[in-house]
Length: 579
Ligand code: PEP
Ligand code: MG
Image (tube, rainbow, N blue to C red):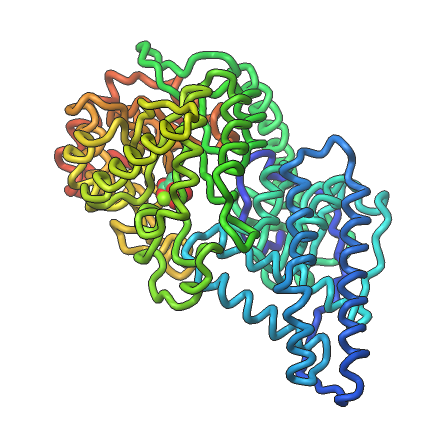
């Protein structure tokens, strides 16, 4: 009888794999409090330093084995860990603890790890919050050396075509396993926002994370099916089930090659309504995919990465160099640079860390930029300067009052004057737009549209704030519903306001890249969608199958009665209509 386990699928790409299980034996690192004699403290410090050096050597060895053609954003995952091993928070602070408390190296390191991960836990941003995994991975490597629990490495041939089962995988493990030809992997811990999940998506490895007790559920060598889309792992499958999954693997391959034929084709509906499809990017390297898929440009360039893994915020030249690389790489395609969207937990202001009870409602994004102009002005100057090199727009996140728009415009005017005084080239007409992701702004969209050059709907936050559902809280995730009638009403209101005031409106939240929602968004009159690059071709395929005129009529009339259950369920059926 088929046996199944549930976890969190990482979705996207070739998400199904079939192969024999390979259990990675990873001992748990258990650290208990321990003291050393006072005269042994120097030896203990030395033991810690040697373990740290050992962890660095291991990671450098892993890095050197990664094939030269590996994308730089993938290598960056390992470089981040190497940087963490150099950081005083991991390299120096435990030594202070050993000296002050007279404790063992492993206990000092464990306390420091708990302190650091506590700070990450308090963060609102889901990406930054899961960076806690990175601290734990790095600390684990050092602990294993201190506790002499190094694992034997598995030969590459043994892993070819196998489904690896592991308690946890670091980004370095994931990259190496990929190069060793694994078919997929299953981990007991981790979530959809972990670096391991992001890497699996980016490398196209079918994977299911967070399958509790996976190592106890499956036997070494038994055939497994990993469905990374549904988050299911199956064992002891009968012939029919196996044929079903083999068919799905083949269908996915056929689908991927048929999607490739859409590169360069316009994103126009059957009745000739053409949409602009843009990419959301997080790192300058992402423009390679953006260009190879021939997106119409970048609709959301998240700039937070520039502020991460460092104790001081970037200066104007660093901002400028990063933006110039992207603008030049896009070779004339338009780009929307979003200004800093970190919360109270940002690295440049550690004082707030952990003290803010409700970070999603705290000092973040535009509020932070207005409160701390020293943090914001270098970014603003760099954006104004880089706009002289190509078609750049600047987008302000988390707007909720018109005073914020006025304050931003004042800062922009002052910054223009100072650039002029400095004799530096800049674009005096830089378009300034705003993200509509707070219900207060959505309700006042007409007023915002009069003051701004464009609007972009950030559904990830708009859903969170409209429904009072923390977007990173697993306990209430089942209630996070972009199709909630009130959310739809707000989205429609913003699109209509943009049309009334004659300014462009786009959507850059995850909703924009989900083919299920595209008939609805086309019917609502959206003409610009920005999404993660991997979703572009699927979205284009969906658009090309639709009739915009018919959808618009249907959606208009349903939206007038959207709070009636019948109209709402008709609309949700429309969302699944392209399958
Ligand atoms: C959003 O909120 O929809 C959005 C695109 O911004 P982020 O996910 O970066 O908060
Ligand atoms: Mg947002």
